Image 1 (cartoon, rainbow, N blue to C red):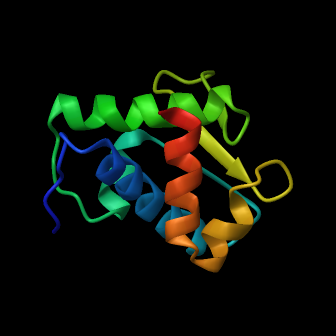
Image 2: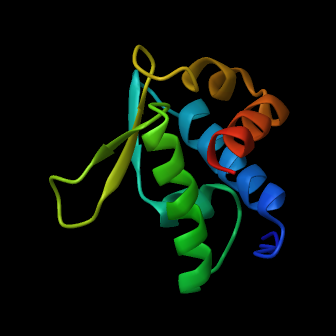
Length: 110
């Protein structure tokens, strides 16, 4: 498990990019849904600290506001969705371009 540096926003966005890459790369279909906790788990972060989950949620909300991912608030827990045909993040995440996705996320949310 990796440590999670909550004081460096660039590192937070890299952690989100790593988690999303793992989620998308393991997808069997064309669409994935996830929670902030799942993003941290897939990034190799073992924490349930509320601040960590809040930071990840902030990043995911920023991506939602920019139209890069979709939010599903029809359930009790809000989930986020990345689909191949609706998200420009799908191809770089599936291809493993972590640095490119990190930069895109950082520019979109900062």
